[in-house]
Length: 176
Image (tube, rainbow, N blue to C red):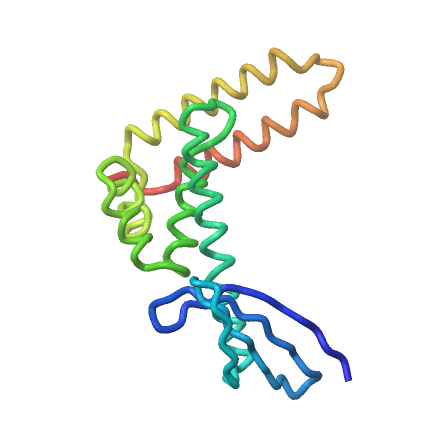
C-alpha cells in the first residue's frame, strides 16, 4: 500500500492550523496531526475528504497566483516592457476564485477598480485606454523593426504578428 506525506495550511475555527497527514492508498484515510499558530501539538482524529483538500489547495493556488500577478502588474506600472493590464485582469480572476474579500478590495480601488469593473461587467475598454494601448503597440512595432536587422526578417514576424493580434483584439472590443 502506497503512503505519502503532505503538509499544508488549513484555516479551521478562525485560526490558521498546519496539518500533516498521511494518505493511505486508494481509501484516502486521513490521520492528521494539527499544530496551531501557538505551536502546541494537538492530536485529533479528524477525517478530511480528498475533495475538501482539493478545494482548499485550488483556493491557495489561485490566491498565490493572484498575489504574484498583482506584484507583476505593479512592477509593470514602472517598467515599460512589462504590461500591467493583463496581470491586473489575471489578479481579478484569481482573487474571484480564491478570496471574495480581496476581489472586492481590488474592484473598489479608486484607480484600478473602474476599468476592471468595466471589463468584468460589460467587456468594455475605455476609449483613452484603447488609444494608449494602440499607440504603445505601434511604438513597440516601430522599435522592433528598427532594432531587428532586415536580414533576420523571420524574427521581425514575431513582434509584428503579436502587435497585430493584440491590436485587432483591442479594436474589436466595445468602447464605453
